[in-house]
Length: 241
Ligand SMILES: O=C[C@H](O)COP(=O)(O)O
Image (cartoon, rainbow, N blue to C red; front, side, top):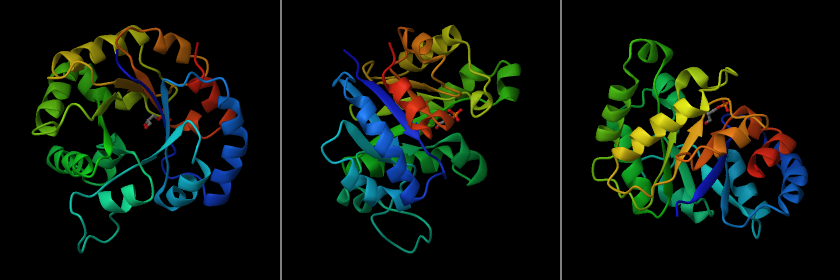
């Protein structure tokens, strides 16, 4: 039985004060959430330590949005895996398309970050997905297979989550057809050594499409951007039918 993982990615949103306001409304809305659903919030670095305390004893796990491959060193602006685990972080997003697009992340650095995260007991969420141009050119399958081939070299597939995020669906309201997301996620699964890796869909997931997305047999969860910033909307997503 594959694990269900519902993750919010706050990206570069929410001060510490705003994060506390969010939790006041969000946590009480999870009283009836099935315990077997893994729920996590991947938050900015400044929010991590305060959320680590606020989430203690709740159903919600803590996630970061990036991790460096070195244990420490002269890497201004980066953060290491032991710095994250020390304060209770359990998950980390690696290779999000925004990091690949705006911050020079390559398949090689993604691979290094994945292995470093696992070495310290973090569970990485590897993001893969195609641009609109690649989709229109019929390159979706080859691009994703290439990303998986390079990103997963020597990566432990027993401690891994993958998120399929078509870049054209991120923040656009233009959700990928659920059957198409299911098809691509099936393709991703067929490339893995471990078929039990949870594979999420991400890209304009909202309260009004979550039930249909989660009804697809290959989809094991979602990685949610914009809709995870509103407590009621993220709670509705977590509590999908
Ligand atoms: O990590 C989350 C994704 O980039 C999706 O963002 P979105 O839900 O705002 O489209």
